Amino acid sequence: MKDDLDCDVLVLGAGPGGYSAAFRAADLGLKVVLVERYPTLGGVCLNVGCIPSKALLHVAAVMDEVSHFEALGITFAPPTIDLARLKAHKDKVIDRLTGGLAAMAKMRQVTVLQGRGEFVDPNQLNVERADGQTQSVKFKRAIIAAGSEAVKLPFLPKDDPRVVTSTGALELRQAPKRMLIIGGGIIGLEMGTVYSTLGARLDVVEMQDSLMQGADRDLVKVWQKMNAPRFDHILLKTKTVSAEATPEGIKVKFESADGTPAALPEQTYDLVLQAVGRVPNGKKIAADRAGVAVSDRGFINVDIQMRTNVPHIFAIGDVVGQPMLAHKAVHEAHVAAEVIAGELLGDAQLSQSAFNARVIPSVAYTDPEIAWVGLTEDDAKSRGIKVKKGLFPWSASGRAIANGRDEGFTKLLFDDSDEAHGHGRILGGGIVGTHAGDMIGEVALAIEMGADAVDIGKTIHPHPTLGESIGLAAEAFEGACTDLPPARK
Image (cartoon, rainbow, N blue to C red; front, side, top):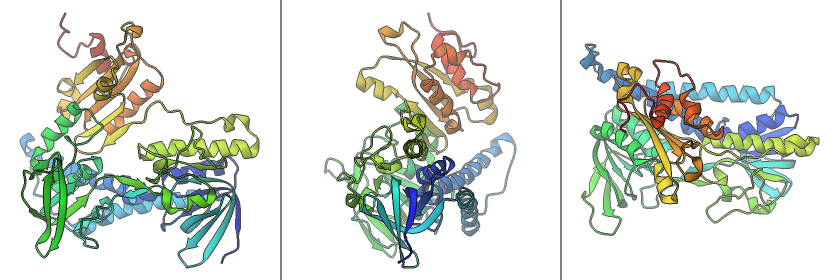
């Protein structure tokens, strides 16, 4: 057993939340130990999630864009796909970022331990290192950033390379002709986009009555219309009931959610992607030994300072609940680190830090992208909140037309309650179109700042850009948009 380590802050997990917590605590003058079970920092997001998937989605988007250029008088030869080189590109992106994190940890004098960590008691963690030895870490404060993992369906064949989660899909081991996506959420549809562009025909099966739950249907409708050619079948209100590995492929049977026969008979696929959600890792770290309460599903409850039921132990990221998004985890990480620093260093201002974000944006990095933040129209209707919409169609956007991508739109939702007196603040917004994810941050800022339509519409946006559609949507709400036909009286 290695000699014991002592630190001010122990951070368990080095994903976006974990490394951000460790680095922020170190920047504030604390002695930090960061424990990560994988060889590199960055967690699921950087190694087998957000970053590698976006590297591949960018390639797919360029390939799809080029395929449309013949109509513009520009002809390219059909692409030749070298999966090994494409995988090498994706791995190079990962290596560059993980290498950067390792360098920043060293600059901050953060001690990084590779291994699987489990609590021993409320002030000690044991790390089972890759070399087989155990390292004990004693801490004054701890931040649990253990993350989550993909759900694996029990009836699917195990240890068959033709059955994958998103992690396996990112390895690009094969170029399937037929691919089944189990789950119609963002992760599955993003990976389906990549494999479709590489030549696969897609089927998707979803238990709910629509794809991409959470986003408004008008946004998803634009995506679905553009992406219809990728799919042979979209099976809604349907479940996968069995799967068998055969030499020809994975033989799959379906059933309607109500138990009746499915619209599609038994099918055989070259690749099956299970993308039905993620489960938190709260039950895998012996948190009970530290007295930390973990729910039956593996989540850890925290207060607005990210503090668990044990006052000196904090938790952040996927393990504390939805939404399971890296950008949420980073902000939670800063709060936890600042509260701890405030308590240990006697800084009253830092110790009052709290996570009180009004909204957290979501993005589907499909093509076109879908991004939304705050209240959706579906939410407003179900909650009885009266809103008024400002919508700007990209068919009136000079930049979108010039790009040949005018299928999208930008919409903003404003408070239309009696108390708002016709000048309500912005409550939500959604964008569908290219670069939607890059633009949704302005809508999030507007909500956080309590902006109204005049604030947004009177803000001068550069022209011609896609981003100006946000200002124009606010003008449309006001009935003052000169880029659209006059509002009906």
